Amino acid sequence: MDVRPIGIFDSGVGGLTVTGRVMQVMENEKIVYFGDTARVPYGSKGKDTITRFSCQDVRFLLSQDVKAVIVACNTASSNSLDYLKSTFDVPVFGVVEPGAAEASKITKNKKIGIIATEATIRSGAYEKEIKKADSSIEVFSKACPLFVPLAEEGWCNNEIARLTAEKYLAPLLEKGVDTVILGCTHYPLLRSCIQSVVGENVVLVDPAYETAVRVREYLNKNGMLREENTKAEHKFFVSDTTNMFDRICSEALKENYQATEINIEEY
Amino acid sequence: MDVRPIGIFDSGVGGLTVTGRVMQVMENEKIVYFGDTARVPYGSKGKDTITRFSCQDVRFLLSQDVKAVIVACNTASSNSLDYLKSTFDVPVFGVVEPGAAEASKITKNKKIGIIATEATIRSGAYEKEIKKADSSIEVFSKACPLFVPLAEEGWCNNEIARLTAEKYLAPLLEKGVDTVILGCTHYPLLRSCIQSVVGENVVLVDPAYETAVRVREYLNKNGMLREENTKAEHKFFVSDTTNMFDRICSEALKENYQATEINIEEY
Image (cartoon, rainbow over all chains, first blue to last red; front, side, top):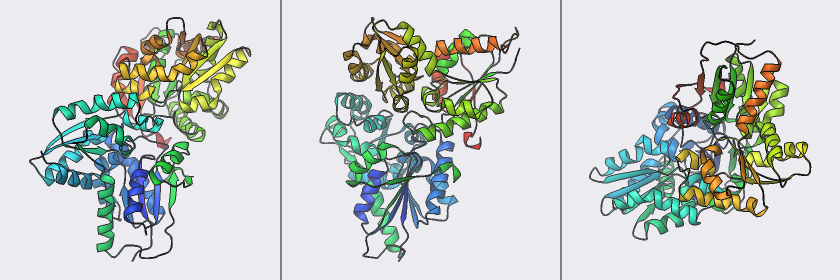
């Protein structure tokens, strides 16, 4: 048994959608969340910058005595996971491999679409993991840089969001994909808009749930679950105080938490 | 005479539109540009974070031995200019006061609209400067967070850009503004779209030109112009290497420059 918290970090507040899944799958676990709201987004930036930022994020979480780290951010998972795993002496989990594995199980026609940030698409990480699961699957990718600002503006299902989704998803639909991975933590907020554009026959995969299941399996196997019946207390940290945290928090977690501001550049 | 370069910083590559104006107004001056592409955008972040980042940006420029600093970023100008002026022993120029003064001269019906980032609007800086110029002018503001990602996606005049501009500008047009300040360095890239939405009778003001004129006046008055006929060489620095620099550079400066990457967190 290990009563220490699970650490989760994200480039901003999008990782709260992953946090919601972790709470649902492991309701007994304490969580320390860090959102790098001062330097958000990571998805338009280069691999070295993403890795440098991610290392600081992990160092902050380690200062909070976490027993494991979940890289909720798809951009950091796809660009920096190997580096983080080899650098830090703590189990580190990304969202890409679980998402890729799930989509590979779901697809029937063996055509999967990935929508994500530019840096995630550029990394080729989802494609690599899908090919590992089943090399006969065809993968089609599309970077969707407008989706995050649309979700943050709260324009999740208006005409502008629909036209944007149509424009981004058209090339994937032309290829006949039957499964699309929501490869960015913000995209579940646009889920109903995206679903209406791709149609009911295309399955949307959010890697968060499968990631949470994997982490639970690992902790269970290694005797690291927090087997206590006292209420699990969670802590939330950000690098810039923004009202975006409150809005996405109540949307993703159906509960209001207070976030504490820290200076991430000191880690 | 002072042959040292003028320093210009911005949260990212948008400030290249200001740099273009500075080159046009002072073709003899050397420029050192820094774009904080690793932490872009500033416009969605809090005042303290914006000021901390801006101080690092100025310290980097000072390490390049600049004789003056232009805060090209409207968000930094409106949130941190006073702090920068009182902290650093170098003349520091913002874009807000020149833009506000120009708009105040242009408006006939004394109704000015401001479009800018959330942090610029929240600061109230443009409103304050306009009221100083003419307290009878009415000011109407609207934050337009989708404009920067639209410009960066290259969607400057498609249906999505037009619908977005219509949605953002409708409340200003309802108030009957005859002048609109483009209060973010990226917005000139959307100029023709915005102009078509507001109509030909509304004047769009880009603060960059007036800012460059002010800086020239100051340098001239203080005997600090670089009065040499040798070619002025410019230097460009970014905190994250991105192809966005190349794209906006060739669009804003009609010339290609190489940018050198630095780690801004060391300053």
